Image 1 (cartoon, helix red, strand yellow):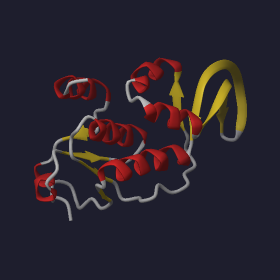
Image 2 (cartoon, rainbow, N blue to C red):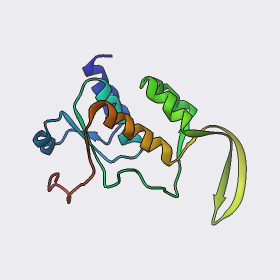
Image 3 (cartoon, rainbow, N blue to C red):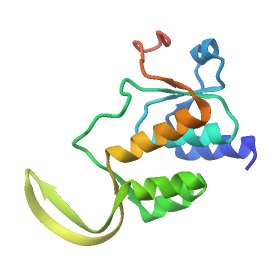
Image 4 (cartoon, helix red, strand yellow):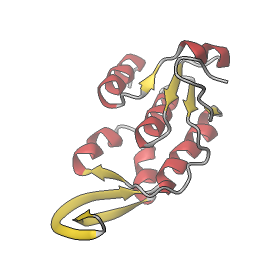
Length: 149
């Protein structure tokens, strides 16, 4: 895949992959702000495409979190384009065939659903791939518009 195609894809799919003027001080092409699932995939994908990337997030490694990211069947097409990253994402996730809809601790409804529940291991897997391949992680974000320290 060519660099221009990667940029177009990321413009459509990963909105938190942004170019920051401040990343120039680190000698990188792109700074990805936010190391959640989208930001980590964007940073790893850009790095594999040949860009020099810095991932900016206050947490390293990503801490255990109550919420859980869902990867739905329609998102698999985009994730398949990441190549071997997809295998790791699936391996670090749990296959779900039923969705429980709960409110205030009570199950209100259940319905068939196919997808993966991606917990903490997925984000740390993606970040490990980024560091191992490109050796660039910054884990502090300074106030809005103030730059990176």
